[in-house]
View 1 (cartoon, rainbow, N blue to C red):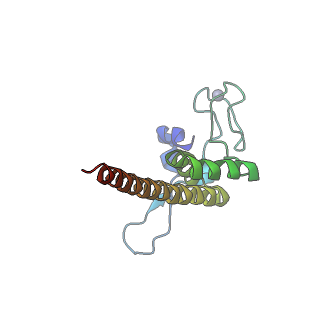
View 2 (view 1 turned 45 degrees about the horizontal axis):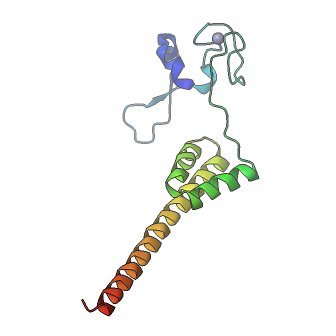
View 3 (view 1 turned 45 degrees about the vertical axis):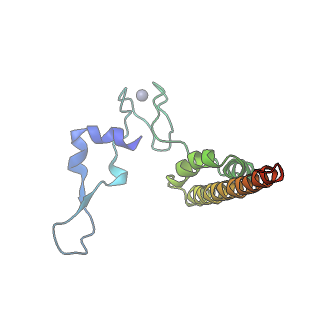
Length: 143
Ligand SMILES: [Zn+2]
């Protein structure tokens, strides 16, 4: 995880002036290539492409979420058939850096919302029909 590195005061020396379109105080940002290549837990050297430390096994960065076709079908099915549950993968995918994953997350959130509205609407129509049927049967009994 990137935020683990922010605990190290040495990193702040590596901050570089960023873009300054407003002309005010220059904004600073972290230079991504200056992240020290050592495990934040055991301080053994690591490589930037590693997902976890080979020495102690600490997670170094989040694994990219799978964006395969079957994964997408599963997420969309969850969104459509079990509406509130679709928000969970939807939001997690939407927070990914990968544009493909963000698109999947957005579709999942959209489908979940549509499905929830449809579920509420069907429930409302069903309830109306039930109330009408009740009234009619009550009327039929002479109430
Ligand atoms: Zn380690």
